[in-house]
Image (cartoon, rainbow, N blue to C red):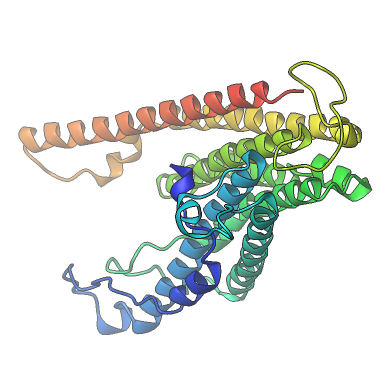
Length: 342
């Protein structure tokens, strides 16, 4: 499925994003708010620009990671296999490496723009009206450390493919998880201070999901790095340093300890995230929704009261199911990381 992604049209794709138009209908819900408290054109425009920045980041992130996978496995995208050949010869490792470099550069440049926009934006002076669109928070997304971590690991993959076995490569490998560690610290703080507040739970769960994604994407790139130091991606020269499952190219033997450190750091992040997820689940379970929402009770007959109780039960069940899915995925990623040991 990954082989069907189009990666070579980045220049055209970047221009197409500038032509996107907002087709959201903000008038589907009636509002009786005073005019001065209603939805403004500025709110809609700001929301749309944020959506574009966030969506483009996610697209570039997926394409860049896919490009790294292509490089490590010497894969060729289906479209390039059918049309992008030179004298009947399909794309080589060199063109795949160029693809990765170009996409990484685009991601780095775009993410820099996102961070500048996020730091320059000010929190709204009042709560957004009900008709306002739900918009992803670039600030919260940045706090998860996802993009910064991916850029570091993509840099490691590129340097290894170029056979740059030096102190910088080792330091980059050993520090790959530092952004995720900061994201975990921010999440832990929010769980301790805000998990009992109903309106804060959505933001906390959002952070959990972003960190969960980060663990999964980091595991993919860790697999890419492992493949490259074992000789994947058309690595030039070199012999196997040792026999067996953990064999690496002799030219990359100096990176073994750094790789082990990188993998260990990611495993620690996954373990800590599982611990925080279980803590959040326990906190939410202890804070009954029935108790929290008791202040919203209004005079109602028995039938309506029973229906309200059923709604609350379904809400609590949804929390249980969500945590089960998060923990299951996280444990699967932990198993995969264990499989990547040298």
